[in-house]
View (cartoon, rainbow, N blue to C red):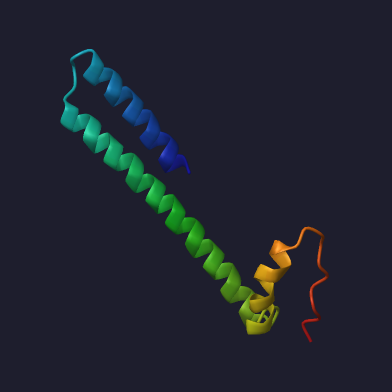
Length: 87
């Protein structure tokens, strides 16, 4: 997340430099690309973390295909649903 914040700040400065004539439009494009790459890296890190959590829960025997198949049904209800026994 810090990478995204830093890239956004660099883009802001680059845009200001372009507006006052001390920077090139190419610099702005490169800064925009850096922001997009930082966002992609952040999303990939979150995805990897979530996948690792699923792998851990699976390895511990806390989730299986039955629990995963029931998850969308549980999420779509307006009232809390008691999870099925994992045994």
